[in-house]
Amino acid sequence: MRVDPSIFKAYDIRGIYPSQLDENTARGVGRAFATYLKPAQVVVGRDMRLSSPAVRAALLEGLTQQKVNVIDIGMVSTDQYYYACATLNLPGLMVTASHNPPEYCGFKMVRKMPYLLSGDEGIQDLRRIIETDDYANAPGEGRIEQRDLSAGFVDCVLGLVDTERMRPLKVVADTGNGMVGPILKRVYDRLPVDLVGMYLDPDGSLPNHGLDPMKQENRDELERRVVSENAAIGFAFDGDGDR
Image (cartoon, rainbow, N blue to C red; front, side, top):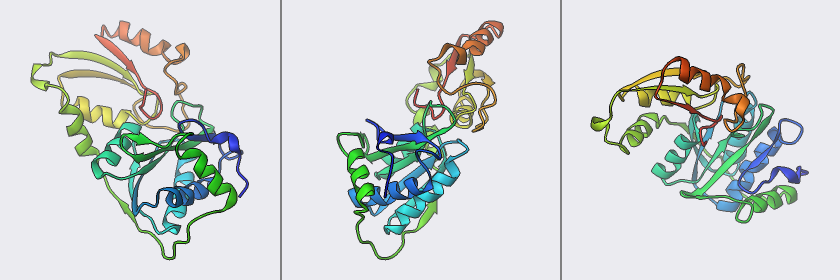
């Protein structure tokens, strides 16, 4: 299959949807991932981008076509996805383009936590398999199971700190309509935190600002809000929560 080689990056597969990366690409990634790692079961998650549901569906087709069983953890942040891969001791794929503009889509891939597929180890191998249609022969079809691991993730995060010693704190958090908002609220609900939330609901149309918190224009409103709310601190998150 012909595929744009530029989408195969150092640490992920990423391109503009659908001109560089579409459902056919996603289906090929699923089949190539299964051929390369030969897993019996994988974890799959996705972000809130408007293209992600269609790309995820095609990815699942590719995986199950290779007789791989899938644990679908739904719409999650990247740290929730990594938690799932580590807890279940499984490889995985996350449909996300992180902090990039909304027209992008892509995949972050885990070999086995804490080892990710990279350009040197795995990603270029997937490209070659897709380009040559060199998929493993796998008669039969895999199964898909939906599973919610969010409660365990919240417990894991809270277990990293001594919550009894925390003093009350007012915090402003801007999740930019990305994936962090829902799980952040659940964590802070169990802490002595007065949360002032900004754009906590996932929305792939990005109605408020961009997803890259390293850009000043995406932090301007948060900085003003920290001052006006007399908050102790403010946090800005990117689209999938890995920065």
